[in-house]
Image (cartoon, rainbow, N blue to C red; front, side, top):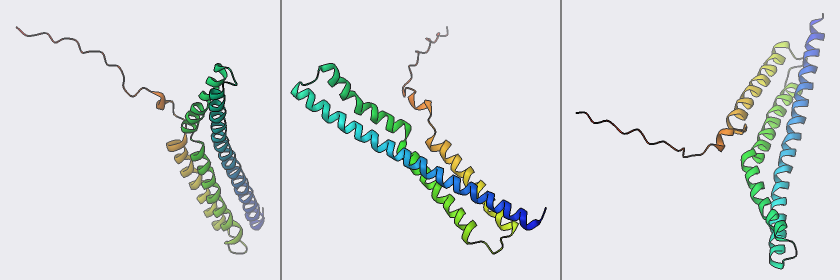
Length: 163
């Protein structure tokens, strides 16, 4: 196979991968951002409607009670699922990937060498590793957060006295 054709094929493949990663990053970033804002909006609306309905007694007490529970559930969801932090992570990944794509499209020599393309591919792999480690360390859902802080400890058995 021709070296220039192989270099161009690798260049196009890396460009497609970076473009897809940028698009997915921004899509998920906006999706999580909208979810976070929607959750806050739902909480405010339910709180307002619950307050008005409770004061005016327009709705049965069971419905008012359910409406009043929604803001607490939304707050719990927002803090446990870390929607805004995850949104920021996706945006950061998108910006970092855009930087790599800019290097690939605009900053390489003409024609680009296989070494230059390999360097950008290596930087992409390092970016993915770094971002994945950050996701696991900071954003992954951990059931350990539901453990009670104070565990019951059984009393120690009485010591036998020496005679």
